[in-house]
Length: 254
Image (cartoon, helix red, strand yellow):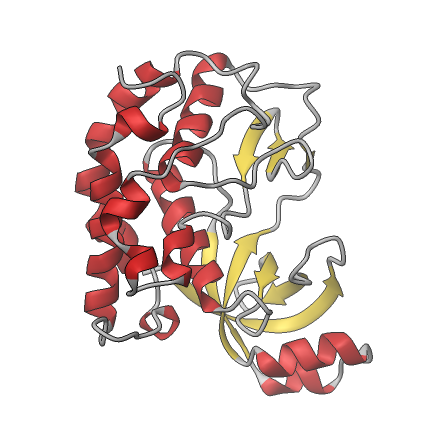
């Protein structure tokens, strides 16, 4: 499981984020970007953040440390901004904290990653159907001259409609990926070679990665009546995706 800590002070909102994330300090003396359970996108966005972020980390990509952050009522009580106070009040309980990287800056192409790393990031986004890493929203930070991946809430779109027809594993498996607007398309090396190295690792990682998600975030649905069943459904969809590489991998199957 991710480390569980408690927020001690709400510092400031990040108003450029659509879900109004905020900076908080926590009882481990760390500073975090907090993604709120009470934001409009709901808990499934937090689940996608953990699943994709922790899979990326396990595959060797740079992702800021994630933590489960308990937000308690006194913090909301003393917030002056009414909009922020409403969000804090709606988010009491377990939220997602992302380690704040001091001095990092948004990716602008001036310091591109090496071709192999860029290919691995492009492969990850194609595999998880993450459409949100474009020049309009790169979702990459540069810290200590290296790229760090953030904001994976738009990936794994299938869970917003399951367990109905729109969330069948075979439908997700057959979903193409358009790499034409990807922020790293022009600097990525051989994505097929990246697939050959990374895809074989995924089946052995899915159990541990899905266990990182708190039970409280795994919403039940008809046919998915327990956290165990929901985790199994995520694994089923991702394993099915691996079997259709010729559909979604930029450049086609290796």
